[in-house]
Length: 298
Image (cartoon, rainbow, N blue to C red):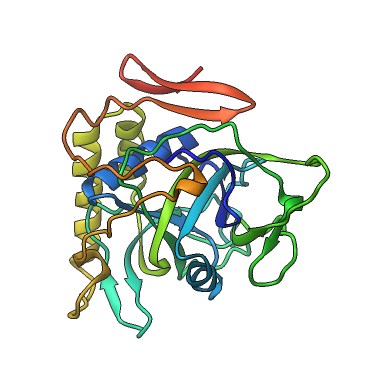
């Protein structure tokens, strides 16, 4: 989704390497998930958005998620004994009525097994993203935090807020101060974000194999590994019995012409899934290419 300018209200998320996966490979994994999910994919975030996403969507009619590269690399999480924390995969989500529902097996959202405090992480969150077209990475647009105000607090987003719903503040002066490059954009679909539950620790050897398959652009191996890990975990968990969000196909989405979006195209699952070309904007445009079958940044 290409934008000519920032929308007046949007969900802003600062993203970076996660659970040992570099950002370009993580975006590739989400493109694969998008194709398997008919256009829908989940992006894990560390905190709840409260009611801000619903409020903004009701006010504007739709809500876009803009993802920017984080300014610094996250610290490696540690457990209470000071050892590097493990990685968990999340197997279910909780709806508004408290019903626990299983995530589709192609969805693979991971996080550190512990919180920064060292306590076990019992819940996580995820943005419900949808894109009818391939994730288009790279943009000339930049986000200036000083020109943003949180929908919830009317204050500029804090450093600890990795994801926040914001309004743009118009100013006559030229933008100044720190800015963040825009990596990619997607639309958020109701309920906009979900709370995840039922985490399962991923074995180190399985995690290493999954990372290697994604790094090499080997979709078939990656899909088989992630589905096996998810199916083993789900076999031990209770399942929801009512209609699920993921039983409903994503709604048709059209980008607003005032935001400079392209017209909607039907989502296609055909084609070679490993031949994706992406760009990660970090100062200059950096091509995301594949050398010897590997995803590399030059």
